[in-house]
Length: 194
Image (cartoon, rainbow, N blue to C red):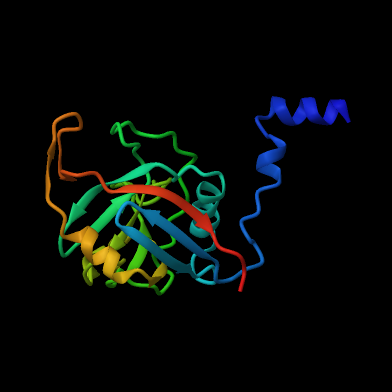
């Protein structure tokens, strides 16, 4: 037993990571976001985006979205978060995941999707809510899109309020579209199965 523990620790595997319950047998898990503006609940679609959802729920279950900020808000476009703490420090991210944007889900208003860099398979921990119908973020014959993996089922009014907060350029990051008054993601929790 001691050898097994040593081997797991050597490989960087802890018992906590082995015991993570991301409800792998639940096709439609739900996550509740407690934000400084109120609660939002999303229902995820594992039938369409299993890799994305397993990745996202791993961050949720580990508590890695707790006490983060929504750092990018563009009215009539997106509300993005999951990657920075309230001090505007970038948080550690796991390995990038495969892009599942061709799954039939679209970047329509009220959906949740993975943020990424220009490289199509670069999504890690950041996500965004669509606050408009963003068809330009969907895949086409010539380009990858951004992977949608669920819908907001509660808290649409909270999301709408988030989308219209005052924003400006953050001096520390030198980024535009940062809320002047931070929107905090207090907790993200996986809800019990229905």
